[in-house]
Length: 263
Image 1 (cartoon, rainbow, N blue to C red):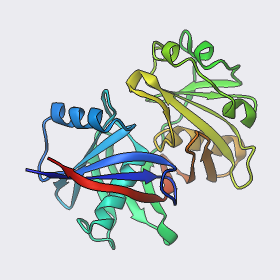
Image 2: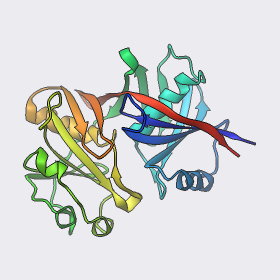
Image 3: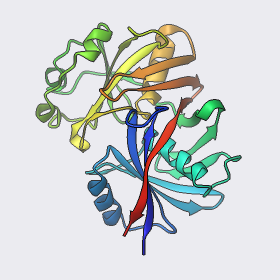
Image 4: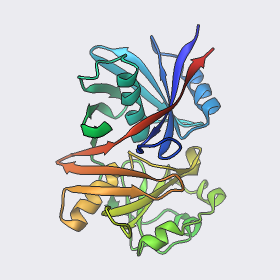
């Protein structure tokens, strides 16, 4: 039996940019060990697995090493695949049942899609032992959300010049860390980079889930609920975000670069 698989670049309008994710559309739930093996074979930040569930789909995400509870770019990629392949009616929202609850994606204009995710505010916290040393930065603020640490640094230059010690960072007691600053680029309000070597992702090109934390943080600092964001990894990506109570709207585009079969 073969399984259809797509590779999609998310949070970009052109191939070979943004964040690549693999998407598998299954007829029924697969064994976790098999899904983990596929994710390791794909060797991307995340591989998403979709199964029909009621009027929507079950959705699970795996890095090359572990299953994760929330992933933005692979959710965006999943909705893109469902609509592009006509597995799901392009006129209807894509609704996913996940470990982080129900997530909805709707189509906007000009190829944009908007995800409805939970807000995950960062509370002030002491950095875990070795975090700032592994990053090689001085922090203006350190906070912790449900999943990750947030570190604000002095300016955009400090974010762009980051060169973490990944071997050291992988030993720090955290899933991942997002480093951020006010934007030094036109058309954006803040910039960021995200690192999670402990779960097999040294630097994630564009991280939707981190914007569940970045959005309430920068909305409070800038006094606005609607913001534009850049993730300034080497591949880079752009997002539109909005704070809506205890939810965050995260919008982006996506491009299919590969379609094939797992045999």
